Image (cartoon, rainbow, N blue to C red; front, side, top):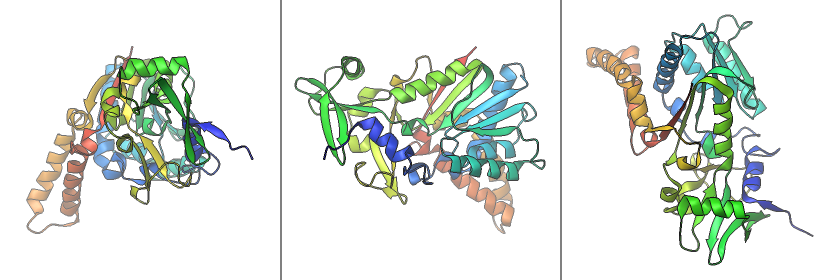
Length: 338
């Protein structure tokens, strides 16, 4: 019997999004805690950012916000539950491949944020809409699930990784892929592996092309350069998760685990403004929010009531969002379109 040989990215795509894929059957992002799941402070800061962009664009109405990889809708919910000056102008589109997640997200946001569910300023789509639009395209931890191609350096040049059922097979890489790897990392030792994050780059370019005016805003884990990424073992930047733990090889039991890739931000379209998530959150008001909760806690800490204990919880959540060795060390990239 002839075994099916698939390119690495095609194998991972099927494992995540195929009929029996991890996300298709209801798996959660990273099977791990994301920033919106960590604290509502993240959504508050994104709401602050959206207000600032809306103001800078002259208060357009409609002001379209498109969230890629929206999952169960937590970020959208927290944005609308926060203090949002652009609320009456905003039209929010949650883009999510999983039909199950789209239905869940729409119900969650509608029931949590709106009294009149007949006229909602939110909708869901399976892919990015058509443009041109004025507004913001944002995504939190989306690019790390857009499967890269995978090359490995051999003595004679670059090979590309394929998967033959449950084993890796390498074949001579196409010339354009080899040229891209050379441009990204230069001369490296045999055995070095390089992910080519073409799908991530295409997604960002599509988002940029959607907008006549606005911003594209991305939060994700990774490295500023491909050279930094490949200086580490593959197990550091290609990871699997199941039941809140690392889950071994990506080849084992496809569909049973999340598969993620650190993002090499130098492979994305140029002219992005780059910062850490800690820097970005501080720029967009997290300390002011936390100071308000600190005052509540300090006032009632000797005999704390429910409100004071909730404030203390949020203070602790802020520390996780800002931790430079954790979520605070994530990279934020912003493209301005005018």
